[in-house]
Image 1 (cartoon, one colour):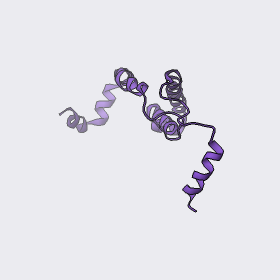
Image 2: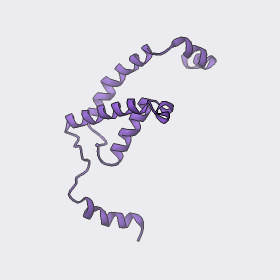
Image 3: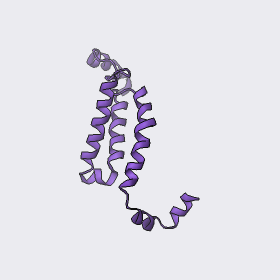
Image 4: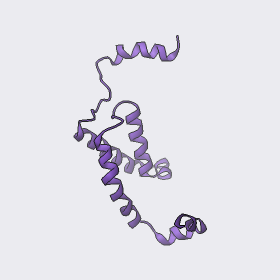
Length: 117
């Protein structure tokens, strides 16, 4: 038998008492906690060498992607819509306020003109 077939047989025996996703789409407090904890972990992991190379937002997205794909978080919920409608638009100006515009213009050069046009 294939590996998938043997895992399907073992799954109900080992994880039969769990229902997935572990955090239900209607459990808004747990979802907000998980998202905020993922963001905090992303910020802390940015202090490591790999985290600094990737950036906190990318590390945070990777953490939540892993949580959703492993069945811990749901893949669709109204909380995600609130994040995309409210939190992300608020975060973009805050990131731009901390940007060094002289450095951005100097490093992007002619490529910046292509994005402006």
